[in-house]
Structure formats: structure tokens, C-alpha cells
Amino acid sequence: MQRKYRYFRTKLGDFGKMPLLEVRLRNGENYIDVDCLVDSGARDSMFHTDFADELGIDLSGREQQDYYAVDGNIMPGWVAPVQVVINGIERPIQIEVAFVEDNEIPLLGQSG
Image (cartoon, rainbow, N blue to C red; front, side, top):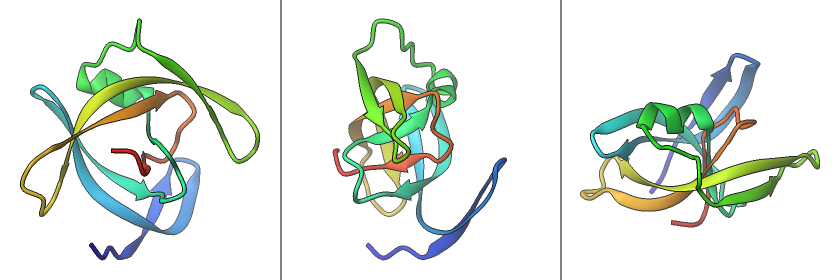
């Protein structure tokens, strides 16, 4: 699948051109349409904990894992299943994602 690089802007400013993929995250009847950075060097997919709230996912009691940022900081993440719908692919894909509090850019990693 070939994707064009597009500009990614956040409240912190312009991150420049990045490989972004438009996806729909689903949990039951709840969904969010989001542009995600495709990061082939990342093992797991990561989203801010606000996404879990919007999708109606309760993170209490979920498995917690530590993730290491490039600056050496450790980010705790809570793992939960989410359905990912990709334009052009017929069926949703169920993957485990990490919800972290310090993630500005929605990230699609290798697993799932």
C-alpha cells in the first residue's frame, strides 16, 4: 500500500511531512477517525489516553507496560484491544494498542 507523505500539525506546531494513514478506531458502537503516523520502527501502536475515554474503554485494571521514548523518558501505557478500520480493506482488524498519557502523535506500529 503506497501512502503519500502529508504535513502533520499539532498544538505544539508543525512536525513536517510524515507517512500518515487515515484509520477509524472502533470499540463497539464508538469510533474515532484519526490520522496515524505509520512507524515501522515501533513495535506497538500507541494512542493518547483521551482516545480510550472517547471510545468508552475503561483502562483501570488493564495490563500496564512501560514504553521508552527516544529522549529516554519512560511512559506507562495501558493495553487494550481496539478494532482498526482501514480505507480499502474490507474487514476491521482487531489489535492490541497502548494508551499513554504523553503521546502527541497517534502511532501505528508493527504488531497487529
